[in-house]
Image 1 (tube, rainbow, N blue to C red):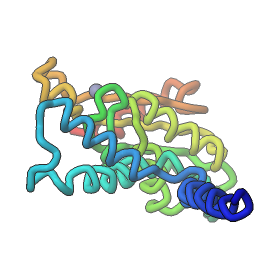
Image 2: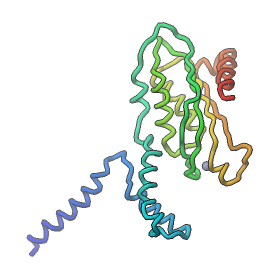
Image 3: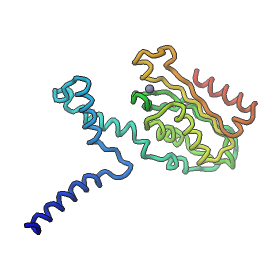
Image 4: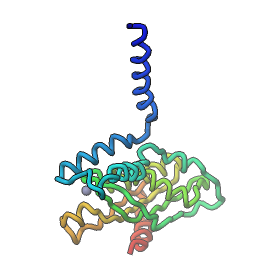
Length: 215
Ligand code: ZN
């Protein structure tokens, strides 16, 4: 009896392990999100089994997988593809559109990032790599200040530039939709590194360029 039961127990165990193993480290647990969304629907007094809501938990799970996939990505993948140019001029990339989710309310905040850096030894990256870097950090539960800092830190780490400036302008749905401080629902954050911080003349120049870009 024991001998015949044992394999069935084992196979059941290995099945459940397989379910867990099917979720590799760093992946997003869609089933868990689905269950949670169903609970939320019940909690707000909805009927998750009515026609219109039947597929909602699965749709939300898939959407969250997109919105939060940056948690499992590294900007190094994009910023390590450095090439060299002969001039060490300031490079400014403006109006990088992004979509993020505020970690306090799990509601979207969206806007634009402006990036400037002064390369050292001509080390630069393609424009699309900067956009990808913004995306890696935006697609996480975020606060705008940290998003701004993380973009700057990644540039410092991977390009070792002489200066970095990052400015982020965004509108927060948690403020707009809830009627909190409606007029102030657009927020600007910025951070400066290297010579853009230490050299007052450069700092003024770069901030003027970036602020002008946002108007
Ligand atoms: Zn919020």
